[in-house]
Image (cartoon, rainbow, N blue to C red):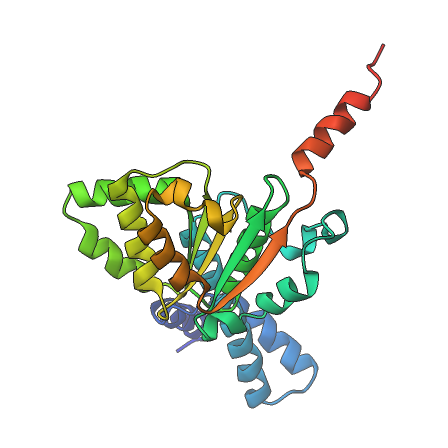
Length: 256
């Protein structure tokens, strides 16, 4: 067979084997290795390393997409100096992912606009990068979805999907009270997650006010018992970013 025939056949085989990085880079890598007088082992190592790196990058992107973060946020663009009440050391420790191995939870508690959702998303993003399966839910949206699943007799299937994750993020618990049925279904999620996977919950309410949302002392107590058994609590009691920005805008002199 001619050199060109071999070249085309190799590309075909690499496509069938689903090795897109090697298919794209084998010729350039061969030229570099030839110029540097490297042997075939070095050549193959270079190609397979590139394939593995890009494969993991693609997998991470799929995990991030399936997590359904409303906006992608990372720790690198969080201003810890502006929120001195937040324990930066603890947050960065959690970003390593050890709490996920231990099936521990994280509660972010504090005032509205202090970066709780940003931190929850950043921890979720870090988990995706570590190969974990993550799902972000607004608490109210999750309860609405659970009620819909119940009406469609799809709860069992949905609970099975939930249990396949390593981390579930429940954002903004406390802004809207739930119906009795909705509160019971949310408790079911927390109960199923207990010691199977980790939860990150953001809330503006102290624990003693959770009954206002859940509607039952008994249900609230049982839910908190499971959430706080093995938990890291991050308090965010600074001033709202949004209020700060609003004040800055008002202080700016008008043009003209």
